[in-house]
Length: 257
Image (cartoon, rainbow, N blue to C red; front, side):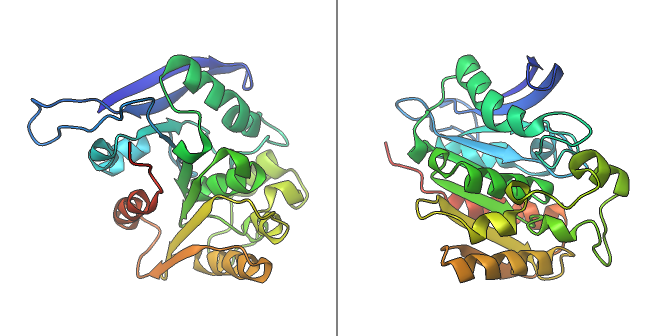
């Protein structure tokens, strides 16, 4: 794999920002990691970070580079601050950056497939929320979307009994009102259409977001939205996410080429 830390200017944000990108590479002479690049433009996974991290965190806390090498899969990891992947009420336009500008910039910089069947999104915690929100609001873009320990009932995050969101972060992102329906993943799944990407949700039973995830699953089931759900022991930590991202990669409907 080639690992690229890419610093570039974002028109949506009006400032410089960064992303970390993994690109498939054939490296037959490399001991222990030969790689398996596809014949054409590689499929791409947009992989989103959590509230306290940045675009480098997946490569620092997991072996994601090693996990994707045999899959011929490119991975794009953008930096989104503490934005909840939202056009902030009192900040910047991170939703526009993520959903409009980032894909265009990536396709202009790198060889990546632009086909729906080759495009995926996943994330953890705040990034799990961002991944599911993107998939539900733009379902025609993705073949599959996955959330690990996602903040999937964001309406309850402000007043969570044990881990409430910092009021300053809430004010910056959402203002002084509850999130709009298009920022509420429970509301989005309750009115989802039929042509959705495959959805995968994992959350540890010891995670403080476990009940939030159960509420999202209940809403999806009421609407008849199919989900792959993994409730298993685990907490809100990297031991859990390092294990579960491997399950996500095994679950992705990657096409044989």
